[in-house]
Length: 255
Image 1 (spheres, helix red, strand yellow):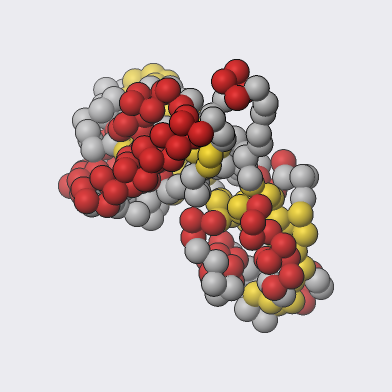
Image 2 (cartoon, one colour; image 1 turned 30 degrees about the horizontal axis):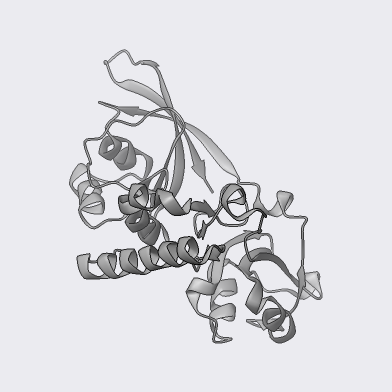
């Protein structure tokens, strides 16, 4: 999601108001789940909000969609967890299940009238999914989500998320003329350099959760690059030079 300037300013205003309320009232406050674009808007003003101790989390370490929590234990005298529940969605009869993908699970949840900001990341493995959601809607989803496409499903709360959220990474060596991010993105996704640059101009590229409009920026080892509409990969640095003077780089692509 590309945020226009007016939308970005409105998002930043809402975040500032949340920080002020948390600090002035002496209480933990949480945002909804934020997209990468919304998080990028937050990062632009993050230093202004240090007084309210912002912290981002989405349910597990590799989540892209995250909430902001304002408040901290030292100031408030107690700890408060993020209001996030992990739900396991699985077919009642696995052998009769349709082939279900991320879009199927998200569509079924949205068809319940749930707004996107109430939902975090959805991890799919086989025909099962782990969905992170706000605690206020967990019971509603459990009671009302009974079918996806032609498949009858059941929903339950879970804390056993490691297996289903573990990423599947394809390790690959690519050859580039430089470690500029546009060059690496172009090579990873088989795009022309011009088409890759358009992705930066339209706000679709994020490095470590922050929007990147500087297409000539050099990548560092273990940078995580997300390209909306294409996917995500980890950059693991230069390996050596090819006989033709190209740079061999290692990347790990999320599948």
